[in-house]
Length: 327
Length: 243
Image 1 (cartoon, rainbow over the protein chains, first blue to last red):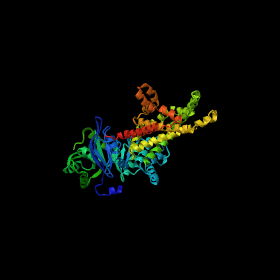
Image 2 (tube, helix red, strand yellow; image 1 turned 60 degrees about the vertical axis):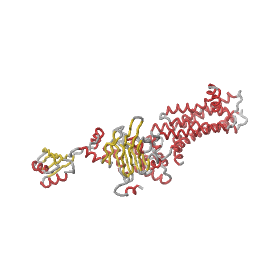
Image 3 (cartoon, rainbow over the protein chains, first blue to last red; image 1 turned 135 degrees about the vertical axis):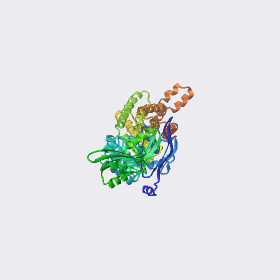
């Protein structure tokens, strides 16, 4: 079914469509006129400070909570009117990954599979499949209450994958895990993109940079930024700055760099015999690195390093959640 | 229907995998059995049928047993957050409520079932019981079943209203005890209201049925009460999604 959706052309189908979603708890507005769309096959990172409305939005998406206003369509179905149908298409991992501690891993997954309407050989196959996919084969007979946090998280993830849902909604899948486990979970989620649309919330920006095609940043219940992690960073960075280490006559190199229209400033300092470090500040626009490289080659100089200064998503995140993204 | 069976099976395993369940079962049977023997001794002068002693003993410990069984049904799921995974699975509120209800009822029936043998054990060892009135025994178990069905549904509803097990336990116990004290209450209120309360008093129903007098009115009362409580429970569970 999903392959069909993905093959439907250059513009993949919209899988999640949220329009003007509002949620109020008494006088507190948790989600305020939120609108976004997620296409089939996308992995979208949902970011925001604590209390920004991430969990609330995800609970509404997964049909656990009602919205105060607005509408949500998942795979073309209305979340409020066709709740059970929507729930069949969703795999949801709630925050903190609640499980029944007295059950064994495989018992729990069998129970969940049955609850999701799988039966007979298909259920057996799916349980086996998610166990191996989440690296739980060796733990299948263990009591969930005795598992470490990392394994429990995997059980939760395995549960959300059971019914091969079109949409995965994962609320902080990486929380409480050590860096190694987080990396594994990230790899796992990354591998899911082929046949799932994934919306995951997290505080760990490194994870978003690693696996998400797009980041959605919300603050106070509103979207403050939505773009690829790279673009978010780019928008925020101001003027790009390229750093090069070149072996050659300093003045000639500087003059060659300055000839370019987009180069605004060139700073330099010498590093060691004959090598100089140039910092080239450029105006916005295309990447100037290829041009600079050509200049170095044309001058017959040597180049041992060239990089664009990168500000992390972390900085971008802090900037947009504190003052909003100025465009 | 399938979702209901799934929830029911999971409830059964949750009940039977917990040590609390076995303690509840053993304690109930021991205490009720002991109360039965004590009641028979006390009853010798009054001359009530022996079935009355049996059912008084079985009913006396019913509220606390049902409280232990039902207090965690939803409160525990709410506390641990598993209610979120449960209610985001493609199951309806009816299936969840009925599945849990059926699980608790099954466990309660298994707990009470051995008490059927009490009279026979008593006869074997005392020799003072010439015959056992199986009709009265059947009538007594009918009302026991009906009252239990009603009390479990009440406990389930109470458990749904809170996330704290202790609060749920107290609320369950008070709600379940209410029909049992209606007879005492009926004496404290004006005559007409008192008559209504007396009509609904569980204590009188038990005594009647335990003598072998079957009356359909209390049966309808408990059945409709059960359905009403379950209906309320479904609505409460749904209310989470009301805007």
